[in-house]
Length: 532
Image 1: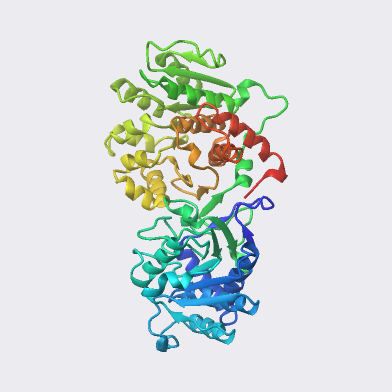
Image 2 (image 1 turned 90 degrees about the vertical axis):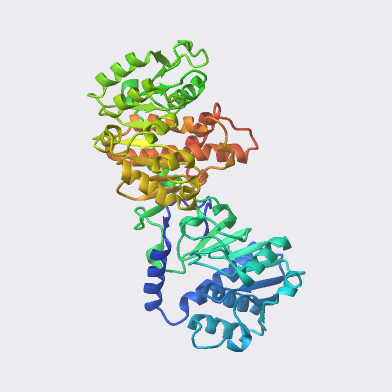
């Protein structure tokens, strides 16, 4: 079964498989099938998509590497030739042609080479001096150089071939992964193909969904090669799941016709030191827009106005007074506190964070709250109280904040975002939303979610404060047992709002982001408008 990830006709939460899991699935599937079946299916899928997606292309160049990814390309080339297309095959980093059928080469690869030759093709070795000429006149290049297993920058002929693709400007269809992209991390240690389309095989890989170079895949398609175990189901068997609209819808707060504001939860926002009151207000305004029954805000700037005239529904309190209210309300449930937007790093701010950690109510720690937490000893009272909490805590760092919390370099966080999110959740006992391209939702135990929504329009001041407020609004209305689902809904809507703005060519800023999120929520209620 082949489909485009993001197709509006599909509404599922897709399992995501790391490299070791995929190799195990591939090995088990191959053992139960006739020889070469998986490579034949993969090659047929590549050829089918090439003909459908690039119907204008009559001259196609296929660049094949020495592994099974190259074998997929060889069989695809054979299929395309059988359909009357002009196909040229270049064998990259495959050595002398006299050794292509040596027994030490993968059996599937040798079989696919025979199929290409039987289809009338004459694969040629890569010639560095003729790199540009190899691609000249082609209307499509199929990248079948590298797949799973990348652990260092491509070198030699592989690097030359990737450079030739990039320099040519010819649309590239990548087989399984863009060559040069790490499957698990979404990073490119060296040169990487910037594909127009990627057809990934068997199952989705994390590196196609999150990481600094995940966008290299372009338009993403999946073919499961008719292996039933990797197909999406309501409860994916994988430990990682792509967060799409179906999962988001399941986490949305349910509002009964007879609901009153007390049932929709209270959100209390603490932050806004001198010069930074806007961050706390943006957070509170988002909580209000996303459905919290009542929203209180305590600004740490003593000179701040006591009323937000643009949002008179927000109830402002002094920090000590709102903390006392939170202490009294924690016994009754139906509330969530947020600490951090614009809070600063004063001793008073730290004491307030510690007091909120001590309460038995859901807590979102964002921005300066994360920086205050990062500055505390890991074996000290603050972190110990965090780990021993009975109710959920949510940490919402961007990569640099996550690096401070983990005491890593930011580059290390971005080099393996899944591991970073899991490690932060495990070390803190909290849930973690690691923001960025393909935001990661992780818990100390349980599955990890990679968000499918969002784009670069979110890279503007204050959008993280909006996410913290939306998350608090949903947590305040949701039983503890459903907190992760509620968080996933908030994260997805945050990105989906930006996607709507991008689709309509509109400007986006933190102040109008909640409006776009509400439009995304409304569309989510219409099945015809969902996408996976």
